[in-house]
Image (cartoon, rainbow, N blue to C red; front, side):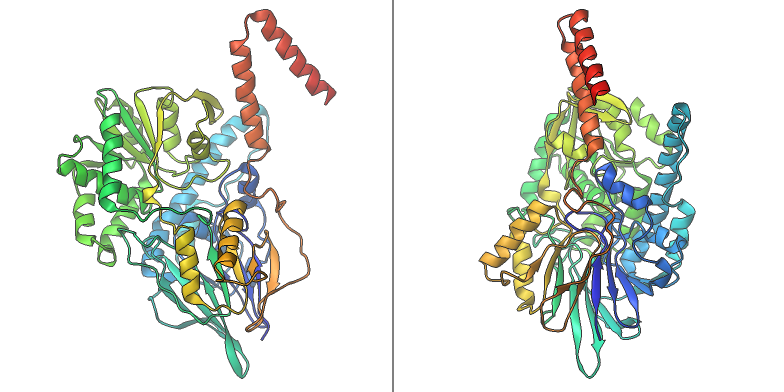
Length: 530
């Protein structure tokens, strides 16, 4: 039986994960994620799928993060009527995350349409609504770890712990091959680090024909996280930030990252290592996700200690918009944890607008910041940024703790693949930026984990055949939705924002009004000549 795959997301970028597998009889997806980052890349979320959703028979979901699950409501609204198979914890998390994602889109589109009316522009529609998110949950079916099941005729699958987040999995797939041995495929999903304090180490089978492996940190070697050392780093940041009029802003992913940070902060406060201060969990999604974590605490390492910390009165959930706005009335040092982790959406943007200009504020980044996101601009030390059309000077202290990462580094990725080997077919590197993929590919070749011609770094919408025990072959070219060379890179929207900031800075710093007028005359002349 011939099998092919089309890489419809996470191709030389870290978001939008979506693989379309096709046999002679069925089509199924592994993941259906939302694109994040530069606006050009995010615009793909509004486009039609590069396949007919009605032709998809099932979805196999690795985990609940929005860059893997975020377009499932759109898929169902567009005609998909199959089953979405995921672990029980993943299904429970998606039940809160997908309706919340729809609600966020409705709110942001409402704000955008108010601005569009003032500018005389046509209104836009959300990618999907909260109602669509809730409707998608009806298609979920929970699967246990380590047990074979048949999602579609002729295909078996089983889920293995990936150690990345609650419920996360690598998926082993077998496609029937007539009287011969089945074709065996392994999709890593996102792999957690070996030293995770929340999760057991990842597991996966060997003796597979083809592997699809994430490469987020494929160009980095991060030391194994010592939990006590991580807490001391966090404690040092809190102690320095704890000015009488100060605030510590922590942009954090609502699921996993928020709960892990809260655990550390509460533990440090209860031990007297840092001063006690209110911890505002300013995210409806994080609040509901925390409830899921408490329900599944037995699946986590240190589950009892985590449960106690997450129930602490030091944590102040602010679910409503009104409660969120009242945080501005807080007196004395306080901590605000809000989404999103890359500062590109959610309530954190409002807190950043209020505090970035102040030297009394500290912003602590805790995770991967994709190119073109506000978080990456802050990470790079930009003196000014634009948030919702406003220019904000950055006087706050920007710091970073990378020890909260939920992703394996280059050494761990290479070791994970070596344990699966030998792999006779293709090793597809996905879910990574080009530099990370290229560095990991070189590491795999230098370490003789793969042959020189074995590593494949697909571009968006590229299609490959997957033969049994042999190298994949690229199939005939199909229309692509984006320039593969620019996918995930800062785009013209980022360049325009940078230019606006440069113009504002140059005019404000010019020696007098005559110099300002001369500068603006040159700019206008350049535009008219262009």
